Amino acid sequence: MTLTAEDRATLARLAALMVPGGAGMPSAARISLQGAPLDRVLAHAPQLSGPLGRFCAAARDVADMAGLDAAAQADRDGFEALAVAVGNAYFMAPQVRHAIGYPGQEARDASVGLTAGDQALLTPVWQRGRLWRAP
Image (cartoon, rainbow, N blue to C red; front, side, top):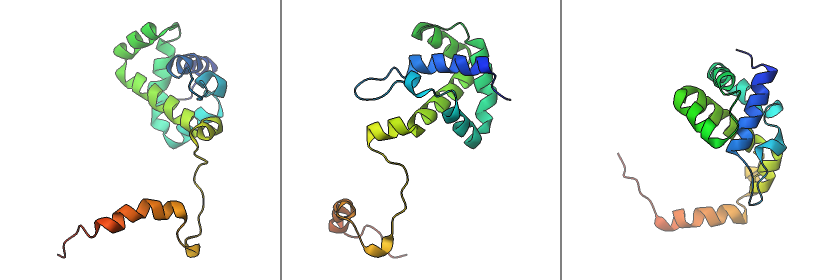
């Protein structure tokens, strides 16, 4: 199922209710999740489009959290698709990744040895010692 422009507009309104922003994090409305970010999510999880489209069509008149809660109670699977799509699109957005200090996946050359950060993560593991038994 392909999401219509009206479905995408509804998703944008619902996302703005779900992710208002604050504490240094951008709102979903600032990111425009209904465009390319949503397309990326649906490319990886096309099975979301059916329940998501159904939910957006049923929730066209939702204007507040109480209405969103009522719509979620009426269509749990549709709301789950909305939550997954909004959450994933939100955290894939460059503005959000920047706000949480995550630059995205980076290629690292393992031949240069461990970085100070790697050392800090591995030291407690090395100090703990072996936890396995020989079979």
